[in-house]
Structure formats: C-alpha cells, structure tokens
Length: 260
Ligand code: COA
Image (cartoon, rainbow, N blue to C red):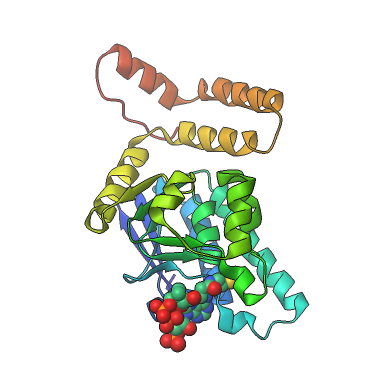
C-alpha cells in the first residue's frame, strides 16, 4: 500500500513509520491521521513486526501539531469527528500490543506531543521542543493531551503546559518524566536503533503482557491491577517462549523467542 503522507521502512523486526510532510512540519491533517491508523493496524497484524518506531521527516519537526489550516474551517461537528479520529488513533497506538518508540528530533507540539505521548517510549534529541500550544489558538488539546499528559507528568505539569501553551526543552520534558532519554543530535538514530533492536529481541508475548498490565494498571485500583498482573503472569506459562527463556537461562545460552 502506497501512502501519500507516510514513509514505511523495515529493518529486521523493526518497522519505522515516518510522517512525511516536512514542508508543513509534518502537521496532522485528516488524511495523515487516516494513513497512520492504517499503518498501525498493518503493523499490529504483521507477526514479523515486533517493534514500531514513529518518526517525523526532516530536521525541524517530529510533528508540529494538528493541521491548523484544515481545522480553521471546521464546524463543531467536524471538530468533534476530527478529535475522535485523532483520539482513536492515539488509543490504537497505545494498545498496539507491541512496543512503539517515538523518535523526536524537533518540534513535538500539540497533536505532535499527543502522538508522542501515545507511544510507549520517547527518545528525544537535545534540540527537541515539546508543548501543548492549543490555548494560543483559542483551543484545548483534542487528541488526548489533557489526559495523557496528566497521567505521564501529573496535574501540575499538565496544567502548566496546557494553560501557558509555552514550549519546553527536551531536558525539561525529561525532568518531568515525559521523555525517557535525551540524546545529542547525532546520537538520536543510534540510540533509537539500539533500543528498538533490544525490544525486538525480547519475548513478544511477554512484552504484550507488560504493555497490557502497565496500561490497565494506570486506569484501575491496585487490587484490580495486581489481579490483572497475576492473570498475565499465569498466561505466560502457556507460551513456548516462557519455556525457551527459562530453559536458556538454566542451560546458560541465549534465548531465541518466537512469539509463541
Ligand atoms: N498546521 C498547519 N501547518 C503548519 C503547522 C500546523 N500545526 N505547523 C507548521 N505549519 C506549516 C506553516 O504554516 C508553514 O507552512 P507555509 O510554508 O506553507 O507557510 C510551514 O509549516 C513551516 O512552518 P513555519 O511556521 O514557517 O516554521 P517556523 O520555524 O517559523 O515555526 C513553529 C515553527 C513550530 C514554531 C510554528 O510553525 C508553529 O507555531 N506551528 C504551529 C504549532 C501549533 O500551534 N501546534 C498545535 C496545533 S493544534
């Protein structure tokens, strides 16, 4: 399938999905949201894909937000549909069942920050800038920003970023727990590759169980979360990978996980 606004790359079990509208700083118009939805569905269904890296084309931006020129003419009904489409995409990324790493080299603003926050891990270059500037447009975040930022960084950071609309540096985003790692500009790709390869070599069903347990756990009571974890832990004993992993440890060799 050829995409107009995305580039898809494969390196072993790592799929890279790149938003490719660099002349618009990779702003998310409706077509791009639809293409991303399809690209993530395909990545979820393809057993050969164990990890997804999400990136933005060009030097300047990961994604500079939802497409303001498109939103400008929206009726409230169209805006509601746009918000729902964006939110569904973000939730589908979060629930992909495979680790998704955001590679962030420049602006991650508005919908771009929301997209990054829907990924499981965020690696940013020291030049990256994060922010929820919707208030400067007379808007509020519409792709989950108020909710995911609250959960990632707490109420006070969520309110500060959303109410001021002011961008923050990658280092500040790291301090707030929004990004996992900050790298030198030249080290970004290598850091993302090493992490992606590490995750791709891990047991896929265990990775899916961890994603599920942590995501569910963030939305429920400790007792329900612990019960969910127990069910996932027990389920892992039905997998070939669990037997391979424990046997490999006992036989002092490297495990080869098959996702079975
Ligand atoms: N929607 C639509 N187009 C966007 C965009 C967005 N969110 N962000 C950038 N662009 C477009 C610009 O309109 C410009 O297009 P043009 O060359 O056809 O005029 C192009 O991308 C380059 O952006 P420009 O503003 O010239 O770059 P800059 O380096 O001067 O500024 C930003 C960079 C990120 C500070 C600035 O583009 C910006 O503030 N963008 C909007 C951020 C935002 O509010 N996002 C939340 C939206 S809900």
